[in-house]
Length: 138
Ligand SMILES: [Zn+2]
Ligand SMILES: [Zn+2]
Image (tube, rainbow, N blue to C red; front, side, top):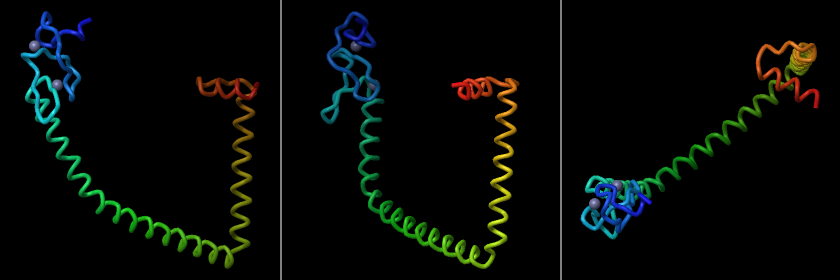
């Protein structure tokens, strides 16, 4: 298997696998750094910089958590306010809202009926219509 030989030297047996890109490397090519084996200085440097990023990410995580919590509280407050406003509006305009809901419901069911009819009539304008038709037949 090619995996058992160095990525750079096809006749040299591999002794390690790069921790970053996964290339197999021989004892001449392997770059050992901070307990990790890499195929090149570039990969070793990349591993180091990403490890540094993890450290700063952990430091930032607490700040982000606090921010997310604040945002969640704001969203909850907004949802409650919107619900309260909706209830208030509904109470004051009950008839209007009911009429609008009935009208919207009628329109939606009319559209659904039309779509169903055209599918049943067998006007497969696209493959998705065909699939819908098959689902209806089932
Ligand atoms: Zn590598
Ligand atoms: Zn090599």
